[in-house]
Length: 219
Image 1 (cartoon, rainbow, N blue to C red):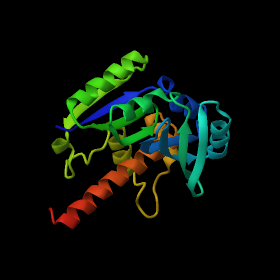
Image 2 (image 1 turned 30 degrees about the vertical axis):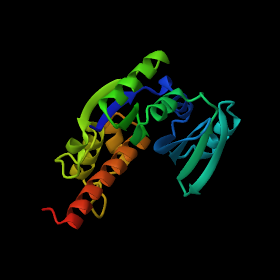
Image 3 (image 1 turned 90 degrees about the vertical axis):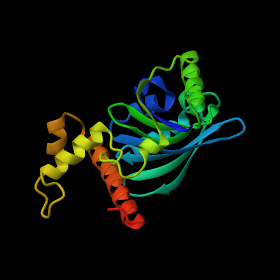
C-alpha cells in the first residue's frame, strides 16, 4: 500500500539546503526530481531577491554539473539543476528508493512530503539516511486515502494554517488591504519572505481543494 511521509529536516543536513541557507532573501520549492543515468536532476522554483546571487553560486559550485533557467519572472525562476553524483545525498536517497516528492520547500526548516509505493520504501529511505548521517524528523505517515482532497485542513501544514488564518483574520485580503505582510510576519516572529511563502502555499492548497470539489460536484 502506498504511503505519504511528512518529514522535517534542517538546512545543514543536505547540500541544497546549505547553499540556500546562505541567501536569506531566497526561498525554494522543489517541483520534481528526475533520476538520470549517473546524476540526479531536481527541478526547483526559486523565489525572492537573491536569485542572481544564488544562480552564480550554483554555477561556481564544484558539486553542480549544470544549472539551467527554464522559466523566469520578476521575483521567481524555475531551474533544472544537475548534481555531480553523489553530491546531493538527500535528493539522491529519495530517488534511489523510488519515492516521489509531492511537496518540498524551505522555510525556517525544510518540509518534505514524500510518497513511497509501500512501507518498505520508507524503511529503505531511513536506512539510507542513517548510512549517510542525514538526520530528519518524521512528522506523520499516512495512506493515500487519508491525504485526499476534501480534508478539513486542506492538507495545510501547521505553519501554513497559522499564517493564512492570521492574514484572513487581520484583513490582508480585504479591499482596501488593512494590514501588510511586515506586520503579520513580525507578529509570528518570522521573516517576511517566510510568511509570504506560507500564505501563498496555503492559499494555493485551499483554492485547489475548493476548485476540485466544485468540479467534481462535491458540496
